Length: 474
Image (tube, rainbow, N blue to C red):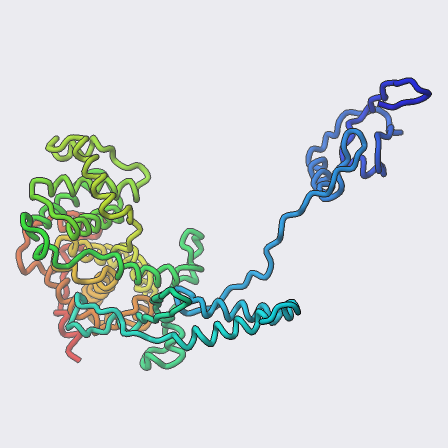
């Protein structure tokens, strides 16, 4: 309202809507100023209006009464974001203190009233922590192939203890094979002979920038989240390895019936073994455990998972929906909802890609044959003593030997990406060849029938021309 000569009159409403951007353009500092422009419609170019509005947002706001609103406090900007180079999967606090010290040196000295500067404090922490770092013995791997002192994991897995204050941290890491090769640690391996299997991939979902770190982490997780290799002898009294094989053979048929992904099948078997490693079960409930684990794996891996009722029907209504849901709750709580477990399948994908690099054209037979050999190990209880990564590497090794017996199946590229040398695969490869030849005349044929079809090149009918043992004579 404007006051003139003691009388109040209504202010004249301008013909054009006043905005902060337009007010700034017309030089309005306070109050409402009439436009000298003729009356026109509102701004038609919505994009220019938004841009003008954004440009004016950092200026003082003009209220409807002409008062200037206080300047809004701007959000703090994150500065000096630095990637900390480190070979370890986990960066210890001593390294972080060193990086903070470097930042402090760039920014200058601390305040004068501080008795001890930040630089001196960080240096003291760094010296103290580095003096406490010690290299411990590698993890004891009794279940790996060969004797108890086998070095197939010990060569790359290192453990270091770091005491920070009152807390104790153990850091595990896999050394970068490329770095080790440059330093001459592996001797015979030549960096120039190792091909980059990620450079040609254009799919953004492949996460090639993080692939190496992802699989380093997977190697660590497979050590921490693995089922017991002797639960049949120590815990289970009512079931046998043969019963387990019959259950998994049936689950292979169920996965084909519902066209489930291979990841679902591998995760199902992993859940079954981990549950049996922790809890005793009667043989009458073994099939219930199998369908429940497949239900959980389907929910985790599949886009459209089968319903609970479908798993009840597939058991010929042996179990009710309530029994399946009750078992599901029991499995989830016992395993603490930990399903992001590296099974054989993710390692197999990576190793097959490394193997395909030596071929001019992609070998479909190699992929199917490696998958067939890996799935055969799911039926065998004795293969629980092998890590998923070594089973995947052995499947690729034996598949290449079966298809190309004139060439050695291992090369520097495969050794680099699998972290296994050929001699370290001996026990696993020979055990897998025993399954491939079916010398024990196993009657569980669901996987063999599955890979005997034409769409997978009938790879279950292939066998090596020469025994794989001839590769390990030296």
